[in-house]
Structure formats: structure tokens, C-alpha cells
Length: 290
DNA sequence: CACTTGACCTGTCCGC
DNA sequence: TGCGGACAGGTCAAGT
Image 1 (tube, chains in turn green, yellow, orange):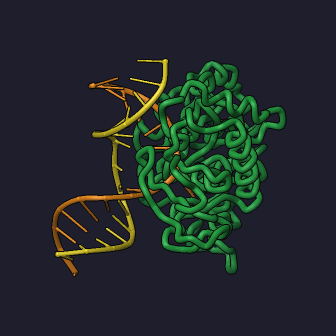
Image 2 (cartoon, rainbow, N blue to C red; image 1 turned 120 degrees about the vertical axis):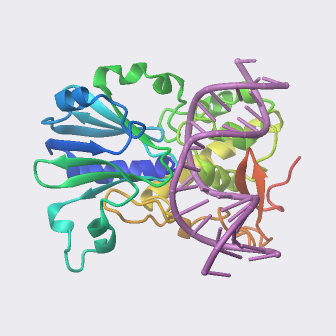
């Protein structure tokens, strides 16, 4: 899925365009995409106005005026694409081909607004979901109880960051970094990128990682996440932001999906291996397995 | 409890 | 061009 920077990019784009819109209709394909009862959707969503779009880790919350919120997880291939009335068939619109094609066979939920504009939830692999819940109960969700700190939170210190890994001593540093209860929002791209930055081999056991290395990893993670947000996230063939556009972080990636190319720091050839069940990219010279 | 692996899905790419 | 298998930016439910 989109990781933290991609979800944040979607949040920012949506915020600009859907706050104040009134929901007129909701359609969905299967109960898995949107499990709420039709009666609840009608009562709490239809006729409600969007009041805010928030993010925690990789999850979005779309708050509405009825006191309910839509909780959305895009997982691997989910997209939220907003299409304004004026976007369709617009000559020279940068995303003509996508916006004019929606809905398509990957469209799972369609929110229609009174204004005539539409928000599509597309998801090729169908791992993603959205569900309606009272805004006041968001904090009681299991996910919210378990999820770790936001890596970009100002008050988050390197010492606190290192302490979050205490529970995961015997596993690899990459597996721990991907654990949402340790730190929020890290996925496969930014795990590889930040470990490269800190010169830590992803397969290193957590217990072998020194305090100074945790400190480096913390600052690298924050830097890479901030850069990715600034660049609008990373794009493979399925990720797009709320306007259907792609992000450019991959132009700045140092190791991710760069196997066979030169390490930008030492020139050695980047390798791809498997760690924590995920494709993993390293510089074999900068990142030594101790 | 911590840890690993398979499952959830569809599409694409790569080798035969 | 067809077919099989591996793989894809995530997380759970199961196993040990």
C-alpha cells in the first residue's frame, strides 16, 4: 500500500477538495469493501457534510457532520480519487485518461456528492476497506490502541524511538520497523531507504543494534519520510493521489527497486534479497550483516 | 508473549 | 502466444 507519505499526500489532496461537500449517495461492490449496514449508511452518511480528513499511521479518517467517520485503509493497491464535474472530458486536464475512465473494474466504493462531484475508492487487490463508525469511538479502536507513535511527531525523541524496539529483540530490525505497533506508518520502501541511510543491514537482529545506530535510524527515517511527503509520495503503477496523479519520490530513492545499480554513496552494486518475507534492497558494502 | 508463515486478491512480468 | 510461478508500497490469523 501506500505508506505514511502516500497516505498523507492523499489526505492533503482530499482535504482541499471534499471538505464542505454533502454526500448524496454511496455505492459499493461487496460487504468486504464496506461492511456497514445499508441502514447505517443511509442514516449517518447520506445528507452528511464532510468536516475533516485526518490520518493516523496509514489510515485515513473522513469525518462527517452526523458525528460519524469513515475509516479507510488502502492496504497495497487502494486509491481514493476525487473527480470533479469539470475534470471529466476536460481538454488538457493532466489526468484525462484516468478520471474519464472511472468507475472501472477496480472501483469498490463510490461516494457521490450533492455538488455532482465523486470520490472513488479503487482497489485492484481488494485488501483495502472502509468502514463507518462514530467519531467518538475512533480512539477505542483496537488499531488506535496498538499503533505506535507518528515518526514525524515533534516530541518523539531518539531515546523513545530506541525504547520502542525493546519488545522485539530476537527479530530482524526490518521486521520490527515494519511493525506498526513499534512505529507508525513505515512500509517496505521507507524501511529499506532509512536502513540504507543509517548503514544498517535489514536482517540484523534488533538486539545487535547499538544506541547510536538507533539514533541514526531515527533521523534517517524522519528525513526520508519528510522528503517523500514533500515529493508527493512514491508511485508504482497503482498508486495515485486524490487527483489521480503520481508522486515523484522514486526519482530520489537510493536503494529501493534499484538492484543492479550503483549505491549513490559508495558505488557498489545494490542487491535485492528477502528479509521479513519482503523484497529488500541493500548496499552490500554500506550495510554489513554483523 | 514473541516470532514466522500463510492467507487474503488481482495483475504483471519473466522464463520455458 | 500460452502457461506456471514468483512477486507486488499491508496486515491478520494461525502455527510454533
